[in-house]
Amino acid sequence: MDIVSGQSIALIQRGELVFVETFDAWYSREHDRMIATLALSTGDIELAVEGVDEACSRALERWKRISAMESPTGWVYRVAINHARRVARRRGMEQRVFRKPVPMPDLPAPAGEIWKLVASLSERQRQVVMLRHVAEMNENEIGTVLGISRGTVSSTLHDAHQRLGRLLGDENEL
Image (cartoon, rainbow, N blue to C red):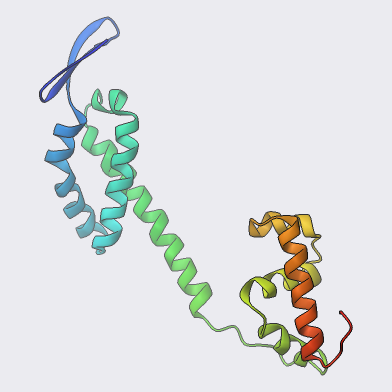
């Protein structure tokens, strides 16, 4: 049984009547301070806002349990810092992977020429061609990896083969 009155909620926990602060009251008091604290910890205000907002949304979903803790703010801050660390780690990995140019190996003709032609395809066509012919995946597997239907994979692969055929000056499909 919950009774909401202004800034607090009356809850019955383990047979006892307990008064806890409402989420709205707690959020109004703590949100900006947690962002400032996390921003100083991470050095990134956007990351701090994202982390605190994610943690607050999780706290709202579990507010009955979180509000009864000794330090709801401590729990939310821990969730926020963990989220910020995950995001920062992911960003760092993406920067290392995507910003570092991968040199194209010197491939003997015609392989080098073919990969240059493949590079001229659209991103989705390149992905489908690479997954089909390099990773040797079937159309269902490619669809699962890219989050598209098998029919879309088939159509994209067909279009890519047609384009490569035209680029090679050959009217036949690859």
